[in-house]
Figure 1 (spheres, one colour):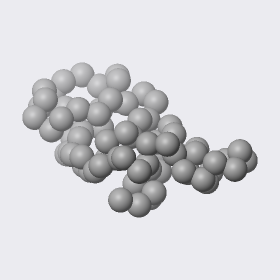
Figure 2: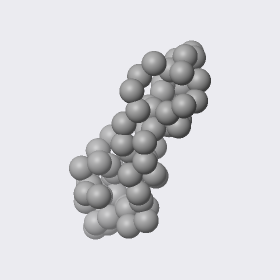
Figure 3: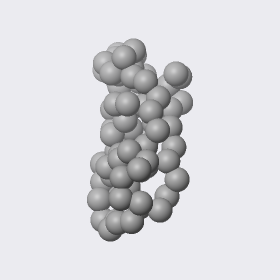
Figure 4: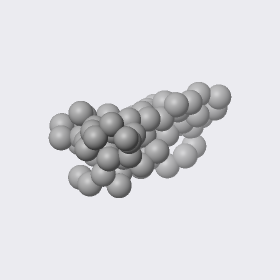
Length: 72
């Protein structure tokens, strides 16, 4: 996996995008790509969007990441 998959993640700040001399997010080495639906916290079921691959540690404020077969 490369760090391009981390774009948009809350912790992508730590992937050389800071002035703290931190070069890598602490989750990056153990992260795996998994299939999930990105669902807004304001969206009601059913969740019709397609599942995409995200790093297992990916977090974006205002969104939840659910397994493809859940509610839609």
